[in-house]
Image 1 (cartoon, protein in one colour):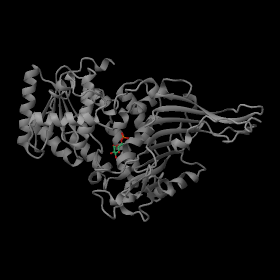
Image 2 (tube, helix red, strand yellow):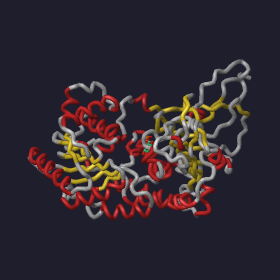
Image 3 (spheres, protein in one colour):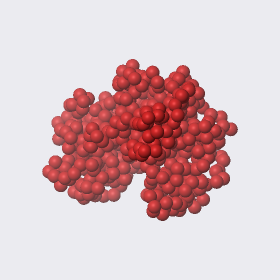
Image 4 (cartoon, rainbow, N blue to C red):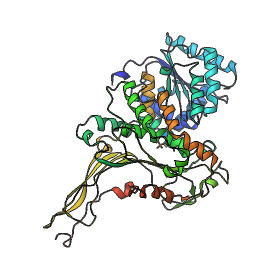
Length: 512
Ligand code: BG6
């Protein structure tokens, strides 16, 4: 907790201050940090947008959105009013140097009222195409000239492939040193994702089992019920591979597969994650179809409600080939994981929202038991990231009765049973950025390796259009080819709802 004490006075400048992310995630995060006493005594948020607005107008807009999106109740309370007084609005034309000059004047005025030069945190919550212009202007005016005090947070996607990411990084490095750049992946701020480290390295009993010797395969799923909603303009041409796999799923893979870090220092942890990314087996262009499945949703039903297909969504071309689903098999070429498949899948408009890691252990080498109704299930460790937040260990037990037959049972650690108020991912990440702790942010080599790992897939998909889109119904678990991907090895996707072990009520016929 000590890193949060004595946070220096900070001026936070949000590019895209009137955008969707700011209203849904950033302002609620700042408000919660403020109410929890995690902001510096002296801080000011400057929200930037193109339109002319007064501070009062902008504050009412923020308040209205806090009512909808913040996890804290009682928004009309005096503390939230005080929080709002720390926000100012500034109209900025991203392309005009004069605009940055007037921003500079505003920042200097705030420093003067603080009586010291405050830290500066630039939050780029804008489409990636603006990053270069903004960074160049910040450079020209010298807005972030103090490497010890000034930081920039950049939302994903960082580039759109390996080459563009390298170019972007080179351009940014003309203005910012690596330690000033905070590349955000909000999955790393989720409580249950961070808990993977605690679970793996805070316990001794799982470590001996955590390898190719005992694990049969690993499944990482991030399934969403939502479609592209209002984000068609962004999503079209991006697709699930770049939107989810390159960042969120590969980061979860790193947490699951990494070696123990020497310490909890940012670079020790990030070194071990980078090792995982480096060890991902690179596939050849003619292997892409063998290892990767892409899909796009058609019309269907989500929880009984009809929804239309991706190609009918707002902002989407009627013949779009953008993928909304990806499943892939990954091998890690290292000692711990050689030969063990890691199955990753993500999709929009799936049957249910589920983000989870499922570790399936090898079956027993020989069993003398006769089985109960449900048959023999291999041991599984299920880490639910969201919406359920729990860890389950599934194992076989004796079925009550006279005969010696088995049935599955599970032990559960439920996050909600311990706390109902876990911070939102953005609160954790912003608090870390304010405190200057980059552990949960992506270092450049991690981003580069993650792009490298999917580069061939991108290139092949760019030149070969899918022939069967749309190929899964909204409200399903994705295309059939994704099932075949696992079936080749005698495996199957494990749906969370199906993996729950219900307490069986035994009747007389069960007790033999
Ligand atoms: C974002 C993606 O990074 O993550 C979205 O751009 C996706 O397409 C979202 O919906 C999922 O985040 P969460 O926290 O709702 O699982």
